[in-house]
Image 1 (tube, rainbow, N blue to C red):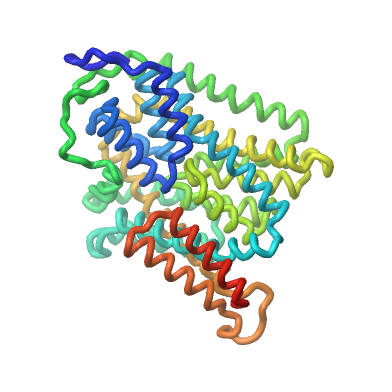
Image 2: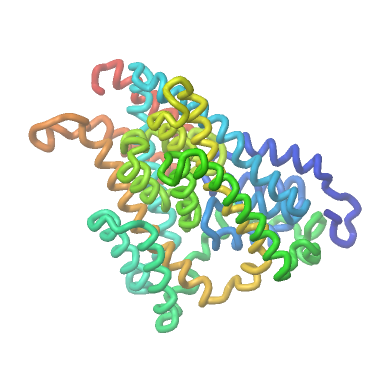
Length: 461
């Protein structure tokens, strides 16, 4: 990428490759932490992209379904080194996490019943519940202002909670309904949809002291030719993306048929990838509905364990789907009982491919088109309504997790006798550490794992 006027250096593809590879191994902390790492490295230290251009790219990624931090890496890689740069940046954001999760998932299914491993997981599960509560607070405070200022958004959030937790309405219908309500309500009460998510774009990324000159991609650097919208380019990239979806899906159907486990995983996680407005926590109830209740690839408690493992690895949190795929491939014996690990690893790879393929297509094909509509209320209002619905959905997920860790499995008798006070206490301390003292996710999970081990040793768990 040629620098703006006054700059003489360029960023070579090899230099960018080394950075994206390193980022894949250090991208802990969830979306906010990952975005903060990229801002510090790319804006403040390396000065590859200016503050306003970084935020412009981030705002675009926030409008799309999918993991925004991974999409932001793909976007900047694409802006700097065309399609190849985008693919490399996005893939290296995901691959280290995939390899780590395959290894951790194997340890889990092979040795998860070992007492000390079970004790550590006992402590980590309440931490996961606390992390979900933190996500609920973060997204809710960003989207829902005072009830008197935005009653429509509060009504959407409450309705979505009842719909998914009480009525078991499928998540796609909730998303579609919220979008329609947002589109209609914005025409009558537009003020309720203006500025509702303004704080989102600045997460971990606003440093007014950074100078606005001297960047490889500066405020006034014109967009490169490959970043300008043309119908021909849009059609070409969409065609390639469709082919990359149809080819593996066709292979799976020819091999296992439509009802085969791998085929159903590919189809299910394609739908999940298109519904991840609001981040991974928003789509987890949908994944739970399908993977646990419909297909029985894993149990509810295994889903919580998988989220705990996902929190301890770098990369986007939605990589928990690799755990779901691995456990599903293991339990379904997709390659037979003599190849459990290979079949499970293949299932994790299939799930990862179909989950992330749409994100690459959104960036490579739709970037210029979506940028041209950014800031227009008729486009952003439905997305704001979806985010409000996501708040209700995450609330249902938090309640589900708390219920599972608070009640002793297999216990009977009065409610107080069945209440797991140790697990509730660990969850409460973890929530305070995360939300009051702003401790990192990894230290909190590690401390909770040690607390679970101690509780087991003292005979409390």
